[in-house]
Length: 387
Image (cartoon, rainbow, N blue to C red; front, side, top):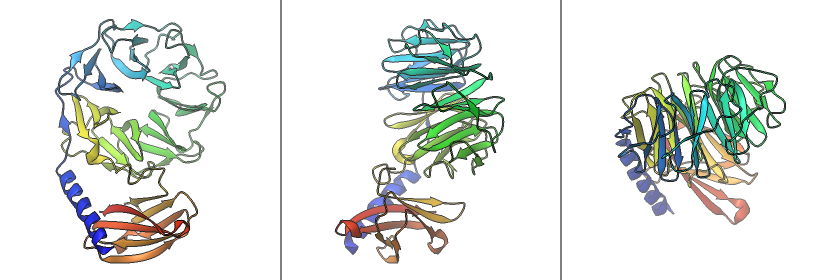
């Protein structure tokens, strides 16, 4: 057993040493400034910069112009639904069925104000403009669903029948019935909100005063340790990324947005307007060019610590605690080993959430070994780098 523990720790150490030298790299484009939006369709990355859409099929090594039919207005949002790409440019929405070769204006029913966001959910397309507009026929026609209120919408998030609309002046409006009725959910939240995101049961919002979080369906919002102006938010597995749109760079959280850390090594342009997650890279659209970073360098091993695991471990730098979350009420025996394979401590896990004081462990690599007494002493192994 001790030999196996040492082997796992050595493999982890080699991986971490490799990642310490990893960093962001700038792609070759696009040539226009201010990449406000990005979207991914299969192997294709589309970026909206100034009044143009650009396409790369090789992760940013080369770019081609893909703007035939657009109106020249600033491209503020891109989205994908099936094989169709959608672009918001000025007060119009365009769609392309041929990977950006040609664009068709499909704006019938929109109010004539700038369209700031596009969100796709189950084939429905939501446009954030002066209010929220919905298209149920692939963008051919649009109908206003934000009845009873008017404000400039910056971002829309949808989960099931729940719609969150972030605004420039009214905070966040919420509908629980797909837009039939609305209410505001602004307790603890600034009135100007740049972005909104739904992560499981957690609501996240980016503002000029930092990122806010709600764990009770928006009844109350609390600030986080991310205090830089924040824009777009994206996620993969337990990893959430946020764009610092006023020289903040890119931030990461692995505990449902509770705490955040900057991941800006090598990123010399810290004005990040947009983020997109590909198969290999995280892409960041900045005030000049798109940057990329390997997901393997910054993503917590999804297989090793996914939200569907029986046991997950995190570290909270604010409270100096290690948080252990068990999905079930199973009883576990936990052994913690250091890099040499020496057992540091043992404890019982008999609650869904357990806290361990991180101050009792020096910085280094640790192996967490859980023994599940309810399933014939099945062993679950996790690793953690204590900072």
